[in-house]
Image (tube, rainbow, N blue to C red; front, side, top):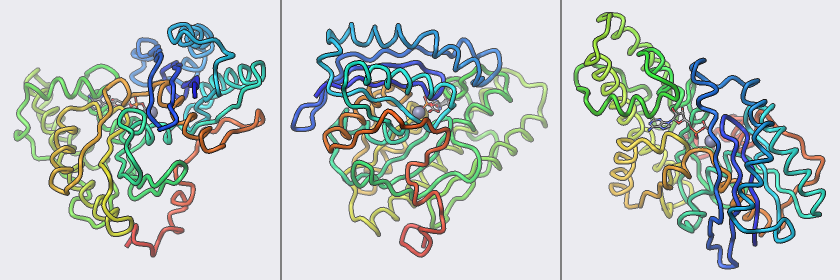
Length: 357
Ligand code: KG4
Ligand code: ZN
């Protein structure tokens, strides 16, 4: 099965062609990503209007490039998948409309993919990971622990009460005058910093649930920075190192709780799977590997270019859905909000189950 995937939910215009064999094994035939980082850098974050316009300008070329590099014609496709949300709706419209147009002309099936589902299923694209597994989805917009039980079967075990983890990295970078996106900058600065210099809180530690909170950590960091301003280069590095260590400790503690909830309800997971841009962070990867080993499972962390937003993950999620006969109509609407687990989105629905005991 050969599927074209299109991703435009945030600040990457991406398209890819993948091949899925009958036994579920995958091959990435092309994976083109055009980052808009430079367009947004001056604003310290993604500007929706700029993003939407940049997607419109780039999408045709990126899709043509993905098809060309894969060496496939539209006739050879078995389906066209696009991320239909959640995300910045101006961008989502661009990708989804493009996919609809191709589907209409080629008379091939359309799959409207949930962007979070695509991150969740990436471990199957890269490692053929069997269900059920415990997913840690950590990006600029999301921090979730999810039980991935099957295609379309996701139970959210924990989430953040305020900032997403990548957002916390980005805000820290902004506060300290580092560039955007902040995660890689903070990680780089932390390398030459003293993680023990500042005492920062580890929010939510030791709670039974698997929820996160980063606003208190962010405030504590700001107060420490204000106390010693103006900041030297070493101060910045020490603040980054102390912040990153706090995040690493929080991730360890919260995921340990998440894995406990997982086991109580679904038995042993086949793996702990990391996904999303923050999974590119090496100290976080290291602590996840340690946690997996300690809890008798393995860590599956996709290569960095498949952790951050890309078209291959959309194409793969599309292929998984097509294999199960799950396709969408041309009337499918783009969605700014689209929780991975619609049930857990109404948290009350899960209260009383093991996940929220
Ligand atoms: O998944 P992603 O590419 O886009 C979405 O948010 O969907 O994730 C981007 C986020 C940004 O907040 C960025 O700062 C963070 O991932 N990030 C990192 C690292 N690389 C990217 N955070 C910490 N360490 C990194 N090395
Ligand atoms: Zn993403």
